[in-house]
Length: 120
Image (tube, rainbow, N blue to C red; front, side, top):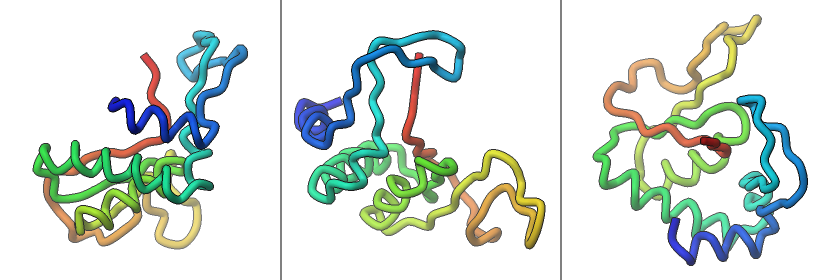
C-alpha cells in the first residue's frame, strides 16, 4: 500500500484501534474499516485510483465487487477502468432472478475481485 493511500485511509478515519474479532475467529488490535472512506469523496477517489492502477496491470476484463462492502469500491474501480462491473452475493437471492452474481450474465473474461476487508 502506498503512503498516499495509507494517509487517505487515516484521514477518512478508517484505522480503528481496539479489540476486533475477525471472521477467521482471531482477534486483532487494529481494524481497517474501508467502508468509512466512502463518506470522503477525495480519499475514496484516491483509494479507487490506486486499486485501478493495480487492476490494470492484471489485464482484467471485468471488475467484481463482493457484497456488500466491496460494491462501492468495485464500482469506482470499474468506472475508472471503463470495465464491466458485476457483484457477487454471499448467497443467492431467494426471490426474483435468484442469482448469486448480479450484472450482465453474458460478460466473460478475467475478473479482478474487489472487497472491503482482507485479513491474514
